[in-house]
Length: 151
Image 1: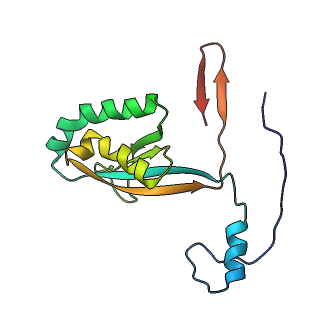
Image 2: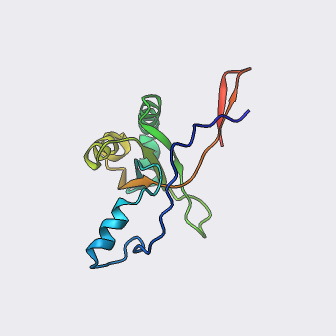
């Protein structure tokens, strides 16, 4: 069975708008682009985290880092996280990404700063705001064992 919310309204708008990051001096065009509803408008934050010390130093702080990650996951702050591997690399090399819910860069930074891996200086991070405009997800509920799968 597939459940879905009713579609409230659809608006189709055809116009030439500048690509993201493209400079323009046409004020009408800028205002038109900013008024476009380009999706759900959800905002999340994520940070890419990387080691600043030796592998041994990072491993020492790992239990406290994992406790922190589980705490923000259980608290509904963390959406998802894990290792990321650059193209052409054999492994992640210690790189990771954590996607969180926050209301501002300041709040997101405060969350990332509380991570013992960052507070200890064993890791550093780059913080980004993510405006989610496109995509979809499916949640499969399994009533028999009270679990769900996010696809």
